Length: 285
Image (cartoon, rainbow, N blue to C red; front, top):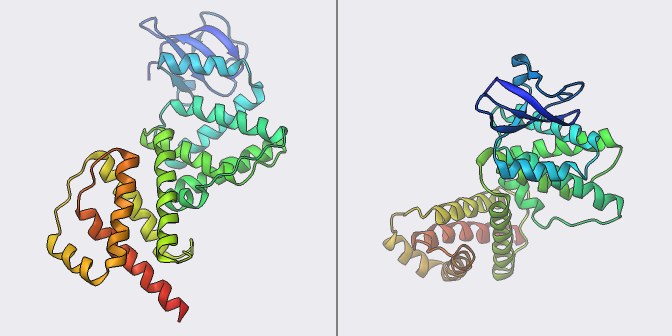
C-alpha cells in the first residue's frame, strides 16, 4: 500500500479523502482516522495496516454519496464489522464490500425501523453452500444488534453471508444471488417431481446442493466434462424417472444461465437423484 498519503479532506472521523505520491485521490477508511486531521497532514505509516483504501473512482463516489445519508456511528460500526470479516478469513476483501455492505446494512436498519421484514427465501441454501461465510455473518449480525440495541431478522444473516462470499471470491452479489435462486428452484422441482420432502439437515441434501452449486459453476465457466455414454445408457434404462428429471433440471439451468450444459451432467445428477429417492423410500418403509 502507498504510504505517502496526505489528507485532502476529512469527511468524518472515520473517513478521509487523501492524495498519494502520484497525486491520485483515495478514500481512506479507519476507526478515528479523521479525528483532528487537517488538510496536508500525513497518514502515518503505523496507521496504514489498520486502514482500508478505496481506489476505484466509482466506488469512491458511491461511498461518498452513502455517507451523506448515514449516521457516523453506523459508518464506524460497519468498518469494525469489515475488520472482523477480514480477520476471520485472513485475506484481503474486494473493496466493493464497503459500498455494498454499508448500503445493505443501512437499508436493513431502516426497514426494521419501519416495521418491514423482507423474507430470505434462500436462507437454507446459503447456509449449506457457504457455511463459513454464514457463521461469520451470524457474528456480524450479533455485533450490529448488540451495538445498536436492535434485532435484525435471521434472514439478514443469509444476505450478509452473500456479501462476504462476494468480497472473498470477487464474484458479484447479483450472480451469487442468481445462483442461489436457481438452486432453490431446482430443489423445489426435485421435491415435487420425486414426491419427497428433503430433510435440509441430511447429508443427502448437503451433497445434492453442493453438487448443484459445482455444476452451476462448471456450466458458468464453460468447463468441458468427459462424456459418459455407456453409463448414461445404463442409468436411463435403470432409473428412467431420475434420468428424465435430471434433463428437466438441465434445461432449467441452460435457460437461466444461458449456457450449454454437457450431457455428462445428466449422469451425475441422475446418480444424486437416485440416491435421494432411494433413501426417502427407505425412510417411508
